[in-house]
Image 1 (spheres, rainbow, N blue to C red):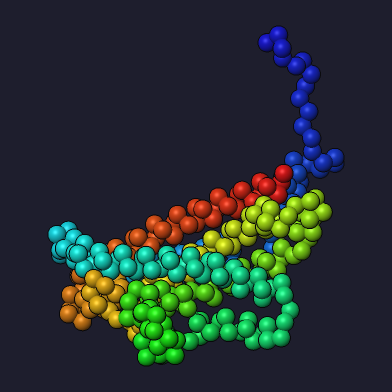
Image 2 (image 1 turned 90 degrees about the horizontal axis):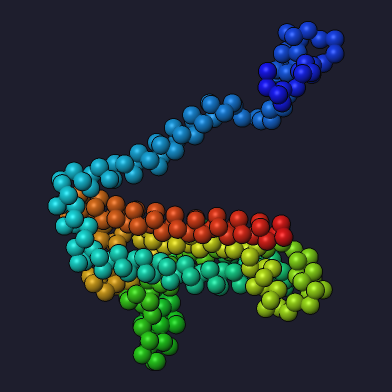
Length: 310
């Protein structure tokens, strides 16, 4: 025996008066009771349905696009996906989408803050108008924006006096993408601002913090995860927008031609491999950018949790 061994017999705790089989049954019953009750089927069945539905609706079409784009070899894929015209279309689509999402992130925050924190006549009507880009057909939105911002439009004719052209160029594309992306930022931030309440601001003011310090150290860190989510949703929506853009863009190659329009042009020319190749590049780039935004969102969530714990 080891010199450090405990000479006392080991004790095994079990409910008094119950045999071994009863103890096992009792433990099994307690473990069953500890499981959370749900109204949905069991984990295995629910997971199977979820994976099957997600694969059928999302993964299968994506795999089909990738397979079609490489069906004629790497050379055909590269020729269609990385032509000079396609690269200019990518640059315009992603650049305009990023700029529009940044504009929406700024002004969408202001709109959400006003709708939540202030009471004024017409607030409910303004809140309802925020959802209008969701319900409005994109073609109708494009026609409406062209009517306003074209050189002979309501606002465009006044801008033309200053030598500003707001339509049929990249500026018109950004205007259209801002229009369709604003609700994503506003609706993402609204519930978070409402849940935040006034207590953190009052506590910061009690401790002597000014308005700017309260915003940067208290309010903005709490809203940052939702703000990044709204930015990502607005960006993703803007990258693939087509209907509202083609009416106001002008659609000039190397000037105002977006990648979704180039895909449609390839399809009209029966170049399905070329259209699939451009779609694959856009899909891959969008996925990588959204992955970066989601990583930033996760980091912001962890950081805000650590700050609350302190």
